[in-house]
Image (cartoon, rainbow, N blue to C red; front, side):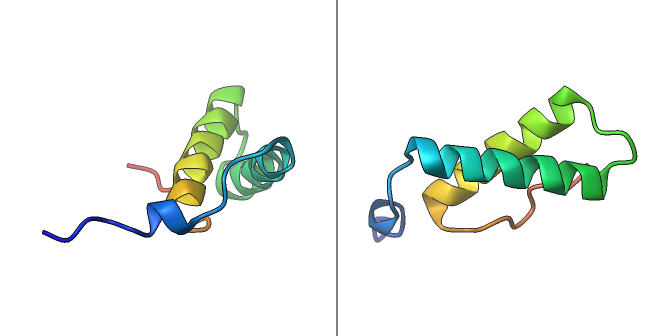
Length: 65
């Protein structure tokens, strides 16, 4: 199996990127949930951080199971 190289080609997280992802998480949570809680926002933010590391944008950040 070939190693995954996409992860190593993405920019590292810095304070500015973290703030942008958090702001996006707040926006997405308010769009997706009727009354989002802090846990909703935190969950979306954590998914966005993982997506950022893998270069996935906001794909699936507010998916509800």
